[in-house]
Length: 215
Ligand SMILES: O=C(O)c1ccccc1N[C@@H]1O[C@H](COP(=O)(O)O)[C@@H](O)[C@H]1O
Image (cartoon, rainbow, N blue to C red; front, side, top):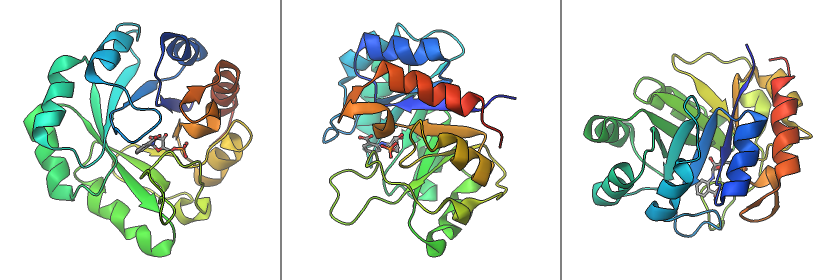
């Protein structure tokens, strides 16, 4: 079975087409206003029209209140919600129940002490996104292009699907998959030429390298 790839933070139709044509399984739309990859509800709704069936449209939000999530869920055709802030397991369960969409919970890892967090969410989220913890002082809680020590999640089992993220690039994705056993990977800045500007060639190479990697 080939590795599933999520390309996150797409902002224009050409970037989106490049990701879809190259075989992305998930497309992430970023609703964190401070991010250089952020889109409005209307922009995301228009972009989502170009996403074919079988490719999941993921709405990325950070510590967002229900009223704002409601605007995204009702104003777009998002299939999944990615919680990328400090949402508690209880909040994950609440978002799932309230909006009726599967939830991906991002968990930041810097050292061995952080891996216990993964178990806390594994029973409540539909999927986990295991990412590098944001560096101290970073403006963004994700999308910083920083990897973590992949050995911390090497060959681990959790009772729900998970994606590996954080500093992945076309050059390191195969090694990350081989080392961790990840069946799904997620990338944002590693396929960009500048913050928020996806490069179709890098997107294509990233996906091709992930698809041919062996977990
Ligand atoms: O990409 C962003 O701007 C972002 C902002 C706020 C929360 C999460 C964000 N991105 C997520 O982080 C992963 C890893 O990013 P990177 O590959 O290290 O740049 C990305 O795929 C998004 O899911």
